[in-house]
Image 1 (spheres, rainbow, N blue to C red):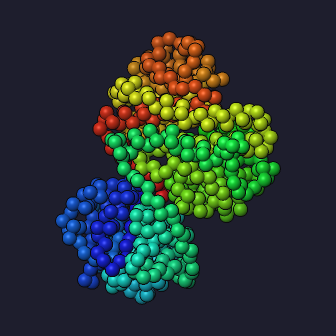
Image 2 (image 1 turned 45 degrees about the horizontal axis):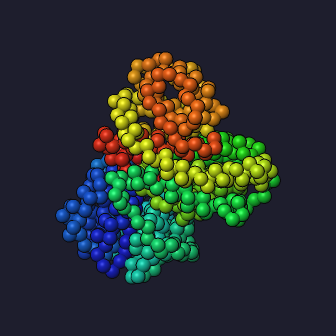
Image 3 (image 1 turned 30 degrees about the vertical axis):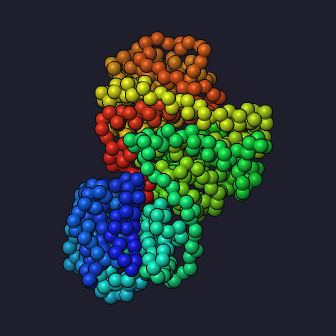
Length: 606
């Protein structure tokens, strides 16, 4: 969500901070700000909206100072305006903050009683005043230690001080934070991507740690203020290109990249010469695992739901799926023979990371499926399966979703073979189909014209439904989510057989309903459910796969046919028209497709 950048240098830093904030824009935000130190004073400028608004400010253009912090904010406490934007500053201290301070109301009452005056509606401002209060009696290190112990909730912090023109403090609990190292300057960032343009040498703070960043060195401390040593990691020095090319939006580009990203994932895990799947260094024997629990949020949760069908089909494992935000608040019955799999595009999703931390505290088996291998979830898992999709800029996930379900399918196939739940002949057949999948997705991408025409009906409706059975049900949920995220149209996904148990009451004349009915074992039942909604006036968009057999139904509004493959791989193909439907619906409405309102790419608050 929010993004932090800090730079301590021997030259002016404002332009570098603005450039780094632009790299954090993909995370989703609604305001931006910068603060620098110069001539013994804190200079702060904030603006509502995009970083471009901040950059155009004449004060920012003339801003000086060799030490500074910047922020892009996704509103939690307080409206998204310039007053509530970060940094927040007193006369002596300026702070940028990712996360939520849960006891901010109590702290504010205490600080007001001490004479402090607040300007914003944010929880962050209490940190500024608490540090200011503690500095009256403590040195820098002790005041930070005392402040951090007073805060309940999650935070990543960047802090500068009027009377300390040579340092930036960084602190972390729950929200990610990294330190970067450069020649005669050092950096603080919530995202290694923002730092990578300046350095490939990174140190990640662990929960409870803070650091003191000077121009020529960095010191690290634990939660008690005791100095500790940290490793410096060297990231790949290859700079990824992040431009839209000839596409109007990153999302459009990322949808079209899916055949390539699928090829990359298959190449990483499938040994073509030996006709096998290579999952190196898997740390457990298969007889040590009798059940699997899949955990994620949003699109990643839908990936988990999709994987449940595959694990049940291809293995004899017991399979559970959990929404991460619910998982750690239930009285879970942890078992040593359960493998807990955490799915997250960013690898920083706060709820998913909290669930992982709980499992780690219980000494459970943990595996992560992530797109960012340097992320907190990847670093703290016992085993990591990267999805190899490259950076996904669009807030609404597309290629990362297909990447997640690809890796989960590969894991299910491999475990099925190792456990002897899947015969080698059938495994070979499924592997052959898998190798052909990228080309089939490429062919399915050619449905643009029809989808563009269809999307207008969804824009004119007050709501819509997405229906599917079996393998198609999680894809129906994902299709409804994409339409909600991008077009702000109310959309719900349901199991097709559930319509008569309540949702059918919502069907009215002209309501668009997407029915996913590939020619699988569920086809005839799904067509029957489709007929029920047609009989009540719905305009049905049927999405199925190509077949010589005629569609056994009448009065269908529109039909889209994807390519044909094995039943368990059809969800990949069914996903593509749903992504394009959401994209073109939003495009016709003129919405900000890459940055939908109220949403963020990396959800770092619970």
